[in-house]
Length: 449
Image (cartoon, rainbow, N blue to C red; front, side, top):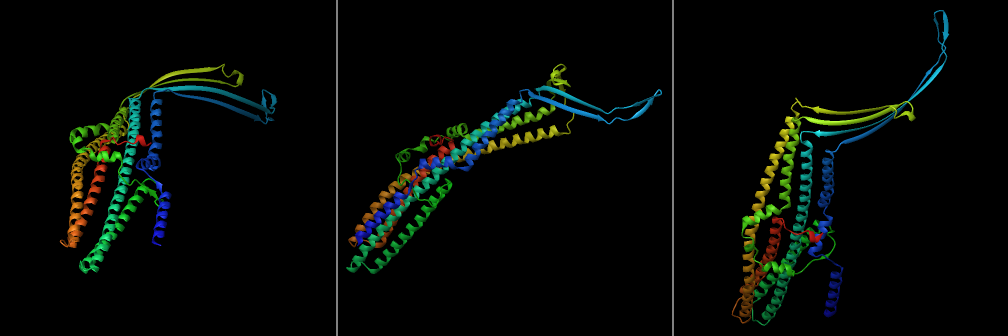
């Protein structure tokens, strides 16, 4: 009967796992880049920046226009009016008159000089477009890093759950052994009770860890825009590339903080974006100052008119002109615009300065965390080996009656903690390596699009 139930359990697990959808890290990143609403909105907004550049170029071109008109007029006089002129009596007859007028015209005007406003507008539109494109690129990097962070959180919790489940198996086996030895009178009943408590605590740890795992899965799926109720199967081990990262001494590779800060300032899309925003703000000052300068406009017009359509082009009119506009007093409007533009530029300088400090701070902290993670990785690996050997020794001593159950339980707890710490250290190190790429602005997203 037990064999039959075990067979059914295996079949059920197989069906359940086959029903689960596979979700690798690469697939998760692709989904994030495809479904994120913020990314899609930003991409849509890029069209407006392209339109602004086109409009800025259009300011250098003449404005063209054409017009045409037709008018019809009819006058009807009733007649019958009588009047006397030099002794003669006149009576007016009813009259009807109709007139039609036709006209066609065309004109063009061009800004020959507008105080450099059009040049500044074009430069500003180009800078705004490039800044928006760089901001769009940084959003992609944000999505990749956040997805990596959340995905590794799931895999980390899966590894921890395995450790907790192994701990339950060990405690269950140990409980069975101690119970049998108690029946033989080899150990006290107190040891049985102590092991029962330890076994119960281990089961509770499995429940707690499984809840944390399911929460991390739900958080990842929600971030990707997937249904949190769907079942997905994630990677249950480290890839060859991730194992290679654990073997590299990244802290030594990035120990020159000044060098990596310079690299980040050169490559970070968001930093380059705010620099362009500052240039755009300076262009805004130029545009505002153009209000103090004269403007020169050229125009050319042609028109024709007639009261008969076949004689439309018999009468023509031509005109060419230049208009010079000199601002004398604009009710302080120009001064106000200049003030606003200068304040905007100063605020953009503050944004650049703040981001530069933040980049330096983040890189410095990440480097220090990476150093600590490397040390934790090294110590954790040694601790697992040492704790495993200590558990083996204490278990053998207890079996021979030379040790206590307390020492065995302590040794097993230390072994479980050592495994937990080592797994956490591994994923902390891998995540920090990706975080360093993110802060440097070199985290890859193009291979996932």
